[in-house]
Image (tube, rainbow, N blue to C red):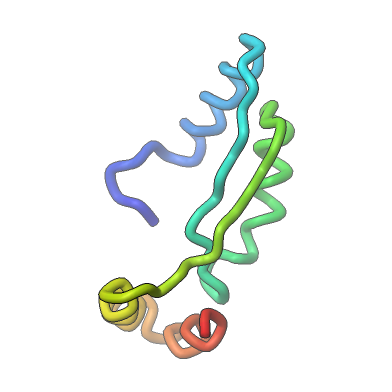
Length: 91
C-alpha cells in the first residue's frame, strides 16, 4: 500500500537477519483498514513470528482532520467497489 517502501519479502528477510544476529525485532502493521487489509493480520503475524519477530502489533487507520478527505478520495478512486464497506468499518 505504501509506494517506495521495501517489499513484504524484503522486510521478512531483514527480520530473519536481525533475529539471527540476536537483535530483538518487533513488527508494527499499520494502518489496518477494515474491509481492505484486516484479513491479513494473522497471516502476517504468523509469518513474522516464524521469521524471528518477538512481538507483533497493529494499529487501525484513524481519519483525523484532512486525512479523512484524502482517504475518502483515495478509497473511492482505487477501491470503488469496497469504499462504502471500508468507510462503514472505520466509523
